[in-house]
Image (tube, rainbow, N blue to C red; front, side, top):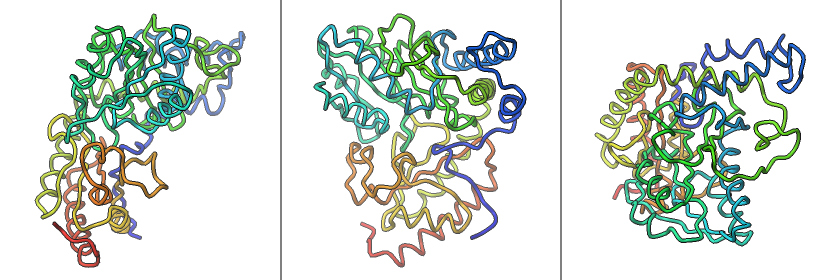
Length: 388
């Protein structure tokens, strides 16, 4: 294996920013207070948590009291659906709408609710991954509690027209949840202007630590806790707070807000160079919307090549890319996202995901494109698959 490594899988996780680590270190060593304690150490920990809450809130245009800290984006997605569902059952409302391209954290929670007697309507997407607002309108019913459409897709990178979709729901008294795990820090999010009811965020997609996330709940949204204990986090997510992780998330959110424009410009240049160079090869095409997409996201179907083999070949050459969603790895199944976009299983098994980051350099991208061309050419010579 080559010693030279280039990381191009930022949708799976981002490296911990050194500035974030620096902010966390005091809370991993000498500062050991529990935020619920009354003494000075507890007060210092509580102050650190509340400071982080304010910076995370600022990243998404929320009030600090609307931010609940969680163990990650998956937990936030689960809480959004289960908490609002539980709060609505007394009104005999048991209908949920989800898009066909949701993250497994939403998709599997919807499946659980369905097994518990809820009705779930799955709405499709166009070939570019966008939800049609008219299809969402048609799916809403008088007993619909909440609709879930992710802000930006974790696989193909398509960015949804969330403001329009959320308004459609708000006008009909339906809650709207958006998984913003991939979008936060790359797309401007303002909960004060966009009528989302709940949002899910994750620290490790923002150059923050793994194992910590945040859940936005708009003030006034009916919600019942799913985690019981000491009543921390407004009683929504009990348990002693992960102070160091929360401080890290706060620092990452602060940097993401301050550097958003510069990061997006840089990532977009790298992204577009990859798209141009890769799709110049025969049988390589871009998946997702060509323009309404994340600044760092390239998702390609490479005809005549299996994605797993291509990922491993590139890894041996020193380039780390992804195959579909990292959260769904381990099972050899076609991506539900690509199937929903109209691709067949053969196409889905030939798709790879390349996601750039703020620290990638233009020279790395040029070298990657050369390695990509080499890998595709050699694998096609060995593969039983044929370019059609």
